[in-house]
Amino acid sequence: MSVPARTRRRVAAVFTGGTISMRVDAREGGAVPALSAEEILGAARGIEEVAAVRAEQWGRFPGPHMTVERQWALRSRLLELLDDTSVDGIVVTHGTDSLEETAYLTARSVPPTKPIVFTGAMRSSSDLGWDGPQNLIDAVRVAASADAAGVGTMVVMGSLIFAGLEDTKSHTHQLDAFESPGLGPLGVIDEDRVIFRRRLLGVPAVLAPAAPATPIDIVGTWAGCDARLLDASRESGARGVVVAAMGRGNVPPEVVPGIERWLATGRPVVIASRAGQGRVGRTYAYPGGGRKLHEMGALFAGARRPAQARIDLMLALGAGLDAPALHALFDG
Image 1 (tube, rainbow, N blue to C red):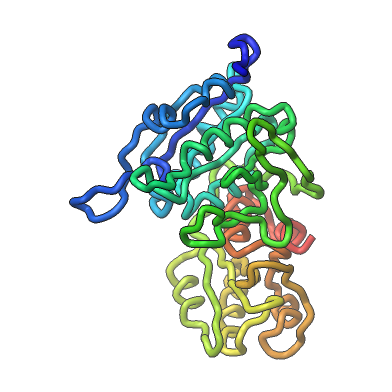
Image 2 (image 1 turned 90 degrees about the vertical axis):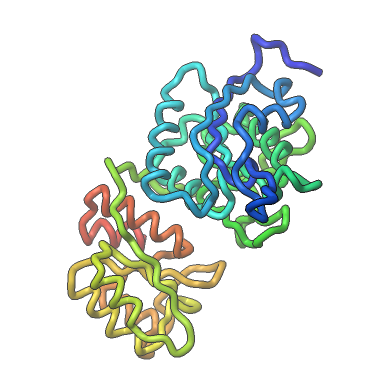
């Protein structure tokens, strides 16, 4: 059944690129950006029955081509659209390789005044299983849903609704590559119905600096690693670092002197975990254990994954948070 034009919700669709905009180029030997916003929208048959969609070609960037500067410029455009009284909700198409980072940055720095829904595709338009049009329709349906009011930034992929604060890409190429580890989706799209099954609790306050602080690095850990990469990050001028530690927030003992050198400069070190789920904590007191790192002055990321901790540190330093405020933000 069609929806009368006067009652249709109005959705701004911001197209930034990604696989949803790609087709295989025989000369290049693989998928490259090719489709315009209008072409993608035209492939989503029946979308006009869902909402009045206004398309905007913001860019044609593959996911790995998104930078902090581009993410921040996109955020600025989203703020403009939120202030537009002719817009009820926003959809952003995005490359899936960095979608979770841009969605998290948006969720942490933009007030949830209207629904903002990120989506994309795991298959290009040259593939028989191109999932872009359906994902786009589903995202518009969520952005136009009255039940999405107050939820803020979301990710819609594979007919599932995820919170922008929680989602991650957990598979390299399957259609159901996105999930919220240990938490599950907020809801589902079942044909023409948007069904929310849970809401977020304890949502942190928005961090909205004039600009994020950069660069902030992520340095990984593994059995037998040392402090060389930490030292390189510090010596090259990074403003802070996130250590993707092992398990509960532990590092090999050879890494500890590098963390000490970082802290001696007065720049923050955040301990996150390379594990996909769970919180870091002060459980272990051996050399390199989480308790020892915390006693040294390292910040603990809680349940944030390393990429999320990096974004929070960029926003926090950009907002001028001092050491006590950083401890409250990360250790609270």
